[in-house]
Length: 328
Image 1 (tube, one colour):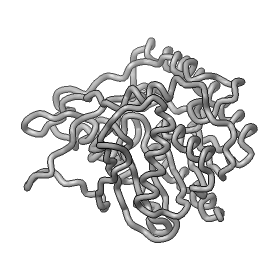
Image 2 (tube, rainbow, N blue to C red):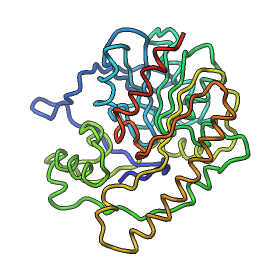
Image 3 (tube, rainbow, N blue to C red):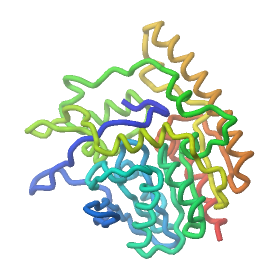
Image 4 (spheres, helix red, strand yellow):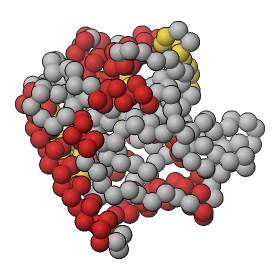
């Protein structure tokens, strides 16, 4: 269901908020902020005090993917999350310059919330938004945190692997849930955790899966924002001058998903070994290039999954806290 680096995923309709319906247990407020003509973005506010942090999800996800991660930061920071256009409850209209448009959306949210130089924390393809804001408007943010988000869509100097090369390597396909695994969203959540080794918040699954008339998970649904992300991933015009202090965390080596280690199929295990070896080698090179090319960056490598803030939550928080505390 989740594949490292493969960033264009699918979307589901929103869960119902009718009386008696399932309610998101995460303690956040929800508001909608207009960022463009006929485009409003869903913004989550987990509260907290101190410097504002703005969490940006990866490709195909919504801000609800941070429902269990964000509250760990509220004792020291005021934490927000933004669902980008074309996903979840956010509106959509396309734009020719996808990276610029999505970056401007982030600035529009910062302006609407009247945030003074927040820190942007982005997962996966959100690295594009971080790099756009950090290079084009470095005075607007105090720092950038790339969570498995420092790939060529965020930094590319022409010397390392391209996103086409990353996308070109293929690993084994994970089986899809079926039957009892789709009895409820809670069982889907448990299946997901057993298969991939980390826990996805149930609200995120309800945002990214369709459901049957009686409320059972059915399948992924496409999202109107996917094409914009595809153009970002395949674009090679990426920012190399990023003066803003940055914390860049890569999953290296990439840890095989749980279902692979449990598989008895020798072909699956062989394909997986080749895939993760190649992926980890390319990631190592990209991490080293980012560290050399962006003097403002502190680059760390953690053995983990692409969803590093879920698979390695404690490790990520351990790296984030001193970085955030040291920002001016």
